[in-house]
Length: 285
Image (cartoon, rainbow, N blue to C red):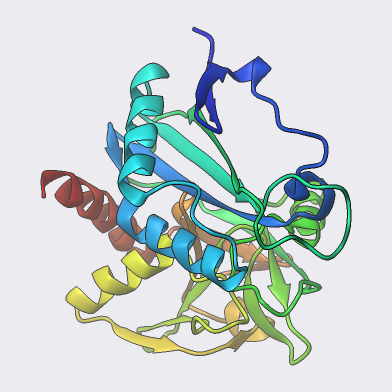
């Protein structure tokens, strides 16, 4: 079956989904994006994703291209048209189309593109832990906005791939891990503390991260939001990363240093399993 995309009011075959060459997303990365996972036919944290989308647009002074209710209808249509049970919906909104100029016209019409993709069913149970590397964090200072400007992230992810690693954790000027190239980073200390970087301008506040914090709080885990160094991660009881596509993925090695005994830790596994229950509960509301 041909994939169906949505472009500015039209449902089109994916291969025919096109935007104008003067779109500012293409020219300047002037726009934002979101990715919503579909798990067993259920959208994961759709409302939180739309909340973050509206925040990112507001911070860049880009108006909503349609109402939130209308956007939900388009998302539902794409899931149905593409017959997706497990996969994701990707959507991006750019400032609009105009003659190439750094300064933009505040009256531009935003451009909305949505695509859908089928992915293999994700496992709730044990998952093989992965290897990660570390790289310098070279991004701009407003990482809280989910912009299209992902070149440093792409360079980091490619370096990880070249080294046979799953992810690259980015390290700031103080030697502290900020987050992964497309994920948030976590450690569990030997004292049982669950630690992740606080959601400031330094990181993108992941929606899966938000769900994990909520789940961990309900399980009475001791949560500490602070930075941590590469060395602290390498000496932690557990390390894992989270995102809409990784969910909770345990890490067995950071820069060739093995974490613990190299197995999936009990906290990461419990949080991964609980996240599936969290998505199922949202669908039942």
